[in-house]
Image 1 (cartoon, rainbow, N blue to C red):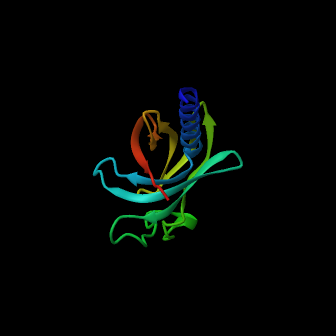
Image 2 (image 1 turned 30 degrees about the vertical axis):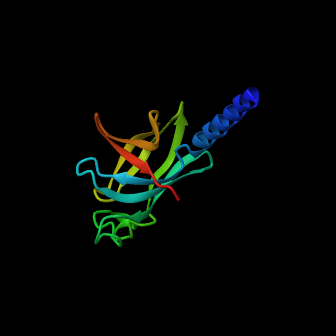
Image 3 (image 1 turned 90 degrees about the vertical axis):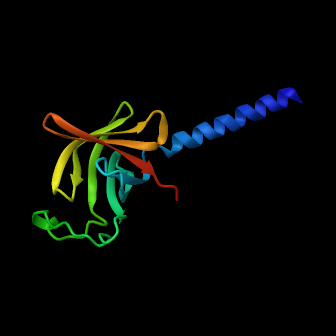
Length: 145
């Protein structure tokens, strides 16, 4: 009986580990403003053709649910922020996703970026945007569906 319990514990541990690894970076993430600490939006991060993409699926700020990209230029000018692609074509490199397209619709600016799971808490996604030598890192929180 003791031997059976040992195998049962090992099987449960293996299943839980696979489930955690399967969650990975893809899914829905709540953005948190690193200056105010308040939730701002939910981003749907997905994989297409081996690359990372992400779009705004919901705005969480009261009164801004239907916000438009007023600072944007060109085809994005005055378009709804919900549904807007803000992460485009990031490539994986040793557990991190890197690229040149992290778009901030509030500032109408595009940044180079790195995105990775927090190794200490896989329900946290680290999102770092670079502008020249300066950078900011936000922690996004996994949204359970």
